[in-house]
Image (cartoon, rainbow, N blue to C red; front, side, top):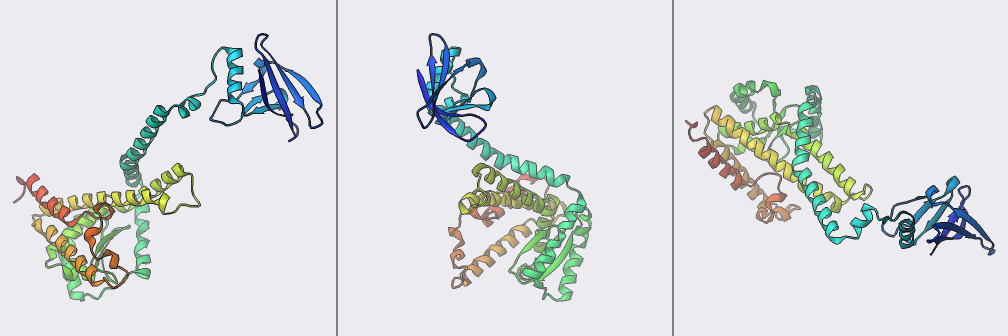
Length: 362
């Protein structure tokens, strides 16, 4: 049996055509080197002195000889026969067996996909939560600079009457005092539509349109509790950590950093939206728990959620002629592509909460 390939002497980059002859009966190896001029040189080879790389697909096999010399060949089957001849065992590596076995490929592919999905849905949130709650409070508070950035880029000074602002602050004061550990700081801003949001550093921002939208201070309080829930669960910090982990995971899987475009970034987007909805659900639960604790009607939460839904439906219709026209009919947007749970779902949550805590409600 002869194995065709080429030879490297270990000192230069010159390649020489070579043929490794295998004498099976005598269990001897002879390497024949043939240069460009047809000159032939013969080298005896001892099998127990060589090293053969494992088989992997059609990758050329390297046979390491003495003094860093190499014999390289594409004839993987012949190399396998060589190993079997001298050792009595087949040389196929686990990877080679795997890549030539369709059922195993399917099984391992399914297991890898299941692991990635499981890690993304359960592992990433658990890791992020652990990291977020073990960060020093000082580091969390230092993230408060985000409101300064928003003041320069998005927010405008509030136009609410100072008397109205003071009324709200006075109404919120006892509830904020009960959450001193979160160091909440209430702020009012204009410059964007009806919204309330919690920011790193304990800032809770109510926009003017949102304050004007509410029909009672209890409705505003329901949303305040929701935002306090975000602070208590460190959702802002956890979301940043999760986004970083998911991005690194996608890059690790695809091995693509420079062309990290929509295709590779889509899983990150969908997962981030999913995590956001989970956080919103947690904050909703916290808001209802606090409303119950202070004997405030749970309907306050449902009412303000419905007002927000009606408000944005109207805004979307009014914007049909603008760049937001694609969002005019929000019913065409699947719930899983929304960062917040559907309004109907949130209202149902109130009913479920009532049934679950029927014995505790006044």
